Length: 80
Image 1: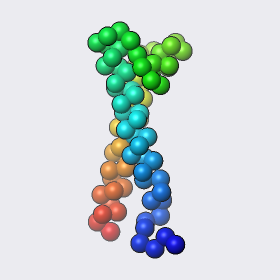
Image 2 (image 1 turned 120 degrees about the horizontal axis):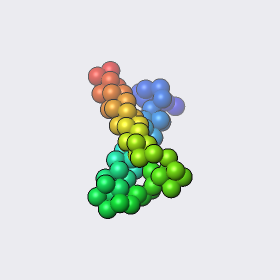
Image 3 (image 1 turned 45 degrees about the vertical axis):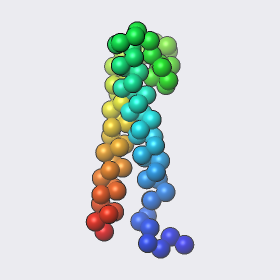
Image 4 (image 1 turned 90 degrees about the vertical axis):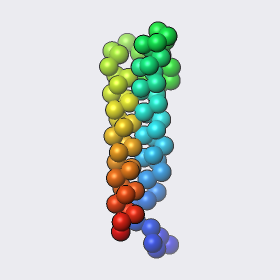
């Protein structure tokens, strides 16, 4: 069955993917807003809904947090 695999391994890929998407959506939207005065993606939709500009950075920070978590779990499972 799951011999040799750490428990929760199926979520590890989701952490990497979701973290990358949130990172790009958050900070990418903040950059396009600053450079070209337009937003894109999920963060652009948040802006259209009337949320403040700092929410882009919150989305990007959530992506960074997920990537750090995924990296820490990968490093820890590599040592075991």
